[in-house]
Length: 181
Image (cartoon, rainbow, N blue to C red; front, side):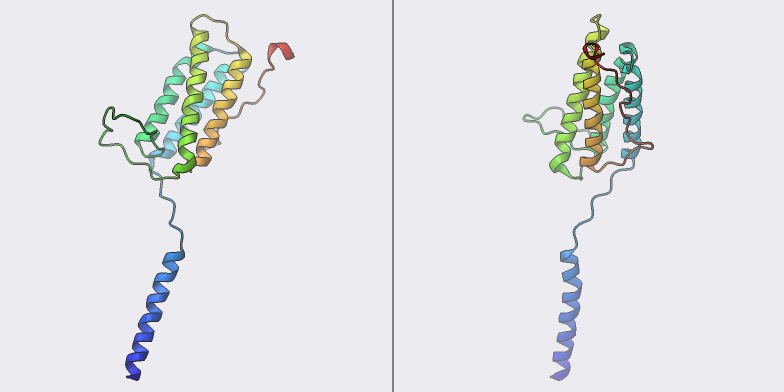
């Protein structure tokens, strides 16, 4: 009887030791697909080209193709599982079989994705308007570019994406609007 109690005590102690630490450990963050690093680097390169094309003198012809490229990179990040895809109310085109499901922090990441897409589209509207012959509004383009860069940095932080080599571009030496110079 004494051997049975000792054996049961040993089994109970081993069971407790093996289950308690596992229950108290927080799950590890899911590992991002390898393509995410490359896509983030591509996004940073396109943003650097956009900054160079708009500051200090806007060259909307050089920036126009970058708008579609940046939106394409965001879509590729969603397809690779780096970013969540915004929910849709009605089923549209079925997701491609090769698309991976996003498994990262969804609570703030989705809003960061939507903010980035919105800021790319806003800059795109201003750039395309200037490319169509309207005089580029340097102050407006600068503000839109600042918002885009902020949203790109928020995306990295809130979605747990790796920073590209050299980090995201910054808007150094932004021109003052004409009424302040």
